[in-house]
Length: 115
Length: 115
DNA sequence: GTATTATATAAGCACTCACTTATATAATCA
DNA sequence: TGATTATATAAGTGAGTGCTTATATAATAC
Image (cartoon, rainbow over all chains, first blue to last red; front, side):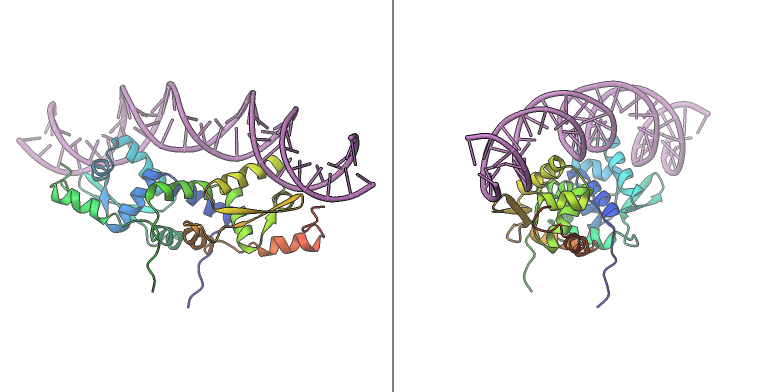
């Protein structure tokens, strides 16, 4: 058994505040299943592109997610190397899996190609 | 192995928003160690009584904490019967133990009697 | 009864937040 | 080259948040 990496109350509360928004919490849950680009998140969450971009930027600023550029697209995923990842992971464990919503996107032919 | 009780994204984000305040997160961590009354939390956190009362009221409104009246005092503790307790517990696990701060209060003779 | 102690609650205010619209940047394609 | 697509960013706005001060409620002590 390894000891759990501790996060101080200041950092912890800031992380929880970031995750304490339904849109961002959904994004994190989605990205826990698979990486997505902004336009995919726009399609899934039915929200404006700037709004999604701003949410993702906040998650990125706290190192919760990382990006990977591929052509025009920037794919985001949960940063498993982050110090806060263990906490993020143990939160998402209590939330319903979002894999289905990505699969639905795939079935509709809206995956990767971004429409 | 038992299945984890799931919390939907709406409830989950609301819970995290509540925990995403440093004062409230500290209170929850403290109450995870032991029950406290408002005046004890005032002493530990060095904040005004109305401010602490308002924070505790928010935690109570989401069923994160419960109260137990004893004379003039109302003792608060984490509600282990709450549906969200498993999530609360797994968050606090990642945060530093706050038992010491209660013990310090005890040593200073400021425990229970509320000054 | 009145005074004291503990707590809750109400109103006001500065600040923050999540959205909007508009625009800028960047990569691809014709 | 210019047009299109994907994303970021800036400015503005209305709603929400956390504190303050002031007051109300409730239990105890005298």
